[in-house]
Image (cartoon, rainbow, N blue to C red; front, top):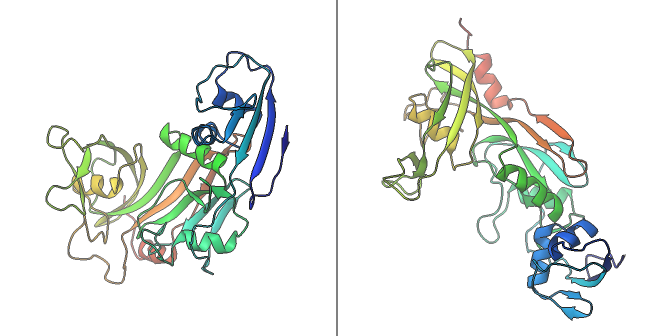
Length: 319
């Protein structure tokens, strides 16, 4: 196999697919050149950037005879216009493929409009200027997201292969996620699985709600497992594991069973329990996943941020 490796110009990849008889073209290429995922090869084939024995092919599912000569033209990585900003970044793990970042409350994960600044993406671009291209653009790969006012751990892909690998784990629901939430009241039962479908609230399009599937075609199954960590007089600290990935899922589910998250101004009580807390008490405390480089299982944890820990320190445990 021969390649040119300058990401600022076109890359030329030449490879002979020996021992690929009966295999699909995209699968054989992903095996022979693992720096690019099968999804990336499908895109390159569709864009007519792959030739087979000197002729352009647009069929990723083509079955091979073995020994085919492949030439692929990889386009240069283009700049996105996103601005790199010198914003502090709390990195809890990093390797050549991924970052695990502890996002503070109040920070948006990704710009939602042109020229938006102050986001996690802007910070990553500053601290990791050598970031590889994602989808042909020089930007970090956002594997998943957290609400603006939820703090905690996020996985960021540094290249396309890692993005595909991590997204596949989320799709198959093999990622372990543990959130800590302080809720109003002493939750009953102490541990349970909340299995209630979530969809867009028909009365407020900015909110989500528990909605039976026969009411809205947009309602989707949602499952959250919780267990009590510590009980207090008027509150409970619970650990939550979302088994599906619906918008605002934990917040909606806990409010639905009658124990809204403290200081959640959308789904919680209007009267704040802690006047100085300017965010809801929800923190993504732990992630368990397999890393792209060697499939090894990792567990990364992040302690409660100071503004939440001070609340816990002010309460007296019971029972």
